Image (cartoon, rainbow, N blue to C red; front, side):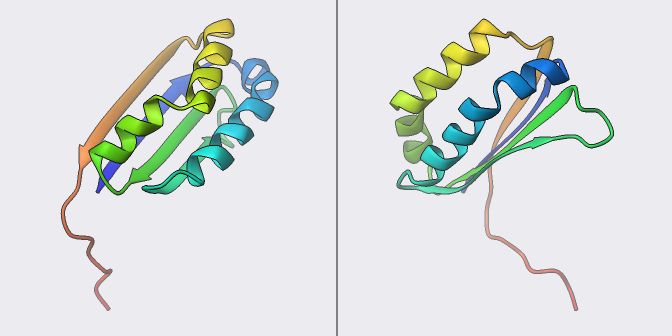
Length: 101
């Protein structure tokens, strides 16, 4: 499994202006083959911070995602309101574990 976590430092007003594009990106990405989860989260304690959490079945599924029309639209929207910073990490995970009882 592939996971992506990102922390984006932006401005609350820019995040609000992108809300429709973000919602469209979540919905379209979740419908993609191989997408297990795709979520944007705005921090309650700091509304200038946007987080992205993604889970993909494979690197191939993620690579296909990068070529979609909704990804191009998202990139265009972000370019129009560039964040102050972005810290993005991609991890390949092994077997999922349950919490001990």
